[in-house]
Length: 292
Ligand code: SF4
Image 1 (cartoon, rainbow, N blue to C red):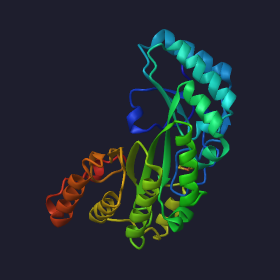
Image 2: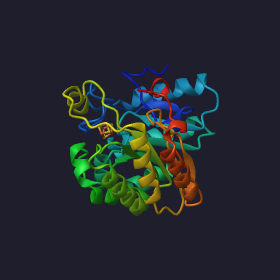
Image 3: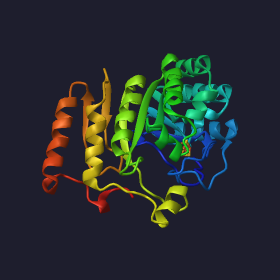
Image 4: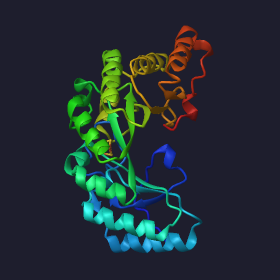
């Protein structure tokens, strides 16, 4: 059987994937807003254990089309280990279409383009990357460990290797004071990356994180749903993407919008303008329905 350790996290689009914990925790684990792996020390799991879990899944599950390698930044594991894992997955599941994982900027700094290209050949074709913001002041506040230029550089390493990127921007991360700068700078960074997928999350203080502590001290300038809609509008309006699927489908979002850019961009901006013109009638997701 598969022995999951601690709380398991996966992107919304991996809901139907087989999840394997190739690594535990996050090797960086310092982002001020992130509570996901605070209780875990980063380690790579023994390949033998994972091979047993793959053999169990092959025997007990139906056809497996997608595999997500957890936890926080499986890409930090050695390329040789990841290659052997990908080979075992492809051998076990003939219907496998893709293997994906989270990639932190730090793991993208460590892995070479050649390693990532080799892993792509062996099935690891999609990374989820939290850009969070393109605004250097916001990235520093979040303790993301990189500035906007470095985020672009490491993301484009993955693109050079032929890997698809699904990126996230964190609405509300600049507070009220930097909302517009955060939105515009994030759009500029996204434009330089040209990810295949882009989604938004809403920054949410969680107990046990530096952001949660700041919130308890009354220091977090949380945006209202209307202000978040204005920030989202600014972000979408400044995107210049040639082929990007945009979604705000994470449970933290106050509004659910989606479209293909650039085809649907004008429509998305118009829809957000309607929200801002008449917020009373806007389809905001009630707090109790959000995954908070
Ligand atoms: S790199 Fe990702 S998983 Fe690690 S602390 Fe930051 S947000 Fe959390």
